[in-house]
Length: 334
Picture 1 (spheres, helix red, strand yellow):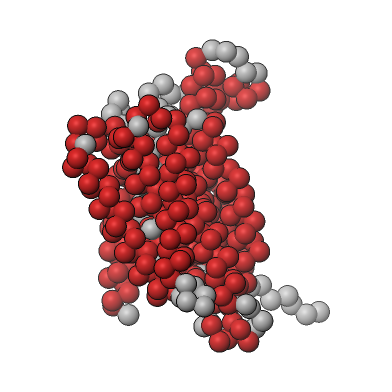
Picture 2 (tube, rainbow, N blue to C red):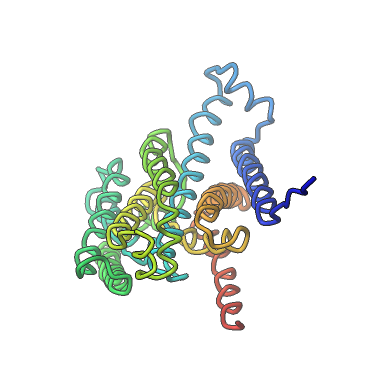
């Protein structure tokens, strides 16, 4: 009787998947439970099983649940965008900010918040439009019979610097109105509602579906353009589709979370350390990991210095910068 060989990588990846999903559920539950008004598991259960118009229902269902869902979806979108860009550009430093998406959204949102404060409700939509406009400009600047990775990076860096100058100019000329933009620029989920969930959810679904359909293209692109063409991949069309997908994911995340940095940069690296470089496993792992870390970080950021709430973007910077330095040192030692 022949023995069936067990693939240790498959067993490890299965274990990581189960652990990641359990961690995500735990982070969501923890984010709903703790806060200025803590709730028990029984209170949370009653809100969904026997809803009533009381204080617990209002806080849990209308404040904390949409907040953790927006955080999870933002983490998924930024992590997937980072994975896609690092794969397409074959650059481990690539993240949504490198194609100017974050800067475009930031300038558009800051313009509304400072120049037309009465239109604050339009900030997410305007930020999304600004992000897509920035992505479109980068595409035009980098197009040369197809999207060239190096031209895309250079165009993105230049455009991000240009938009960053625009934001600095607004802050200088309207210094008396800057305070209202600080939390958004730092990145955070304070005041997020079911409207924000509805805004980002379609793009998360498109992103997950797109990654399921495109992981083979990303794997092929890692082998070089000539090899990918030999495998039947239409390189330029695949690269264009993937960059557009990453831009949509990043734009939707920035529009509801502000300028939340480091997620799209470090999450793919952590996922790669756990499950390897095969995008079939890398992107699902990164999505779950991104959701878990963003929700957990937001929960810690809003409770650790209670009653003062720290924007999660600041907290992520303190987490992400040391990890990035560790990756840099590890790469230099090889």
